[in-house]
Image 1 (cartoon, rainbow, N blue to C red):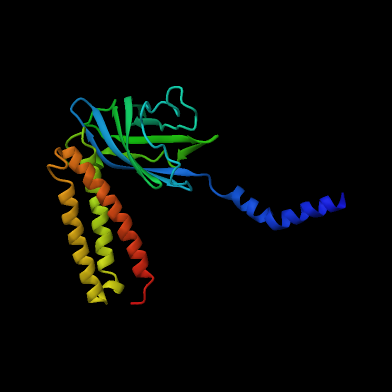
Image 2 (spheres, rainbow, N blue to C red; image 1 turned 90 degrees about the vertical axis):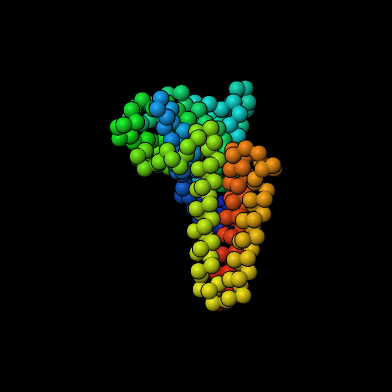
Length: 255
């Protein structure tokens, strides 16, 4: 018996702090950002959302929206581990109607969705959107960590999302802005400005990449605007990852 107590005591000394730290760790959550929004004359709303996982594995986010309607966590008779997003949305405190969503794509712990609904608020009035988005992960529910945050719909121009049937256009514009900011920060960094040869290589590589992207993402390979924007979005997202890794590598180098 004494030996058993000694073993347990030793286990607590060795692993107790790790267990306590795990217990104290924040639960996995998601952050929801509206990238673009447009509202029709009939009060039909289309949004492009970016869902960012916090404390999640890259494979944890729901992977597609087939048979998912936003009202529950599972699709049809599928097992619970095949998750859907459950979405509750209100404008000015009033529930929206005819809600549906489409999974655009996942990239690591970030997912992109198109959300559609009918707003009960006339577009001429000020509108505040609140989104509560969640999904199941095993026996747990992963939730939007700040569902009460109000989103001012006046902050989104419909001109930036002219075709609600093509969510890839505003998503590509969003990713392109991110890439441009990343590229500017990289080429203006002290490590690069202090090395003219390296800066010249980076500028040439970026120009070559842009030419390759446009060659791959224009007709006849991508004959419709939607397909072209889809192609540009995925290529640009991959380029963001590449330059992010390059920036870390350059930052670790001696100027």
